[in-house]
Image (cartoon, rainbow, N blue to C red):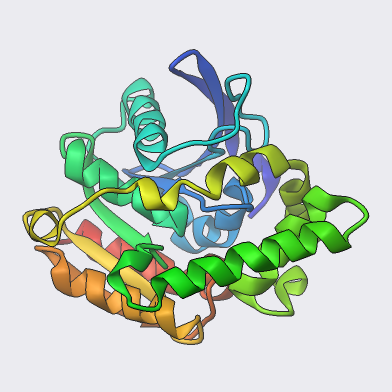
Length: 272
């Protein structure tokens, strides 16, 4: 994908400028990134989708060129979903397909749950609803311990924390998977990273409520991701009212490791 193929701009959401890149024409697909990595995580997926859909990948609060309030020390899934809703409304692309990775998957799920007129379908890539697994509390504790250790051991503590997070989630070769440009951007978004860390548990739900969500949803799990995350993906797909499960031959960073699978999942929900 060449830089010339992407139209970059900003849109206002609750008084904040959110930066986004747009490509193609047709069915609108809004791409919501997860923790640490900004909208660049979608580059390969956008390329795989091609010009036949209108892809909109944006930087969430404090990532890339997007603004955030001062001070900005924490966020919630609901707050992030309202930002996405404002973006969809401002660009006039409702009802869109929303695809989210990691924390972005919770944003996408919250959108189809609370704003069905804005989001007609969703693809949830490695959704971190760890409450669906008995191993969830241990997983959260281990991740936090790894981040704290990475921050202590690095000369630049914020970059060390980001690297520790990515290594825990994606494996020892995370830097190779992510690439230099995206890793530099991740290190520069330390404030956003810190705010994200407590966001996933703010997604409040009941199993009955999940079953009432009628929007077409595909849950994508990495077959080589951590067992707890595969378990969560399977459980969530089972609980949702109109969902299918797609397992990809990848680790946690599915958009980078298997972008064609994500593109196929988006094409799948578009026809349901």
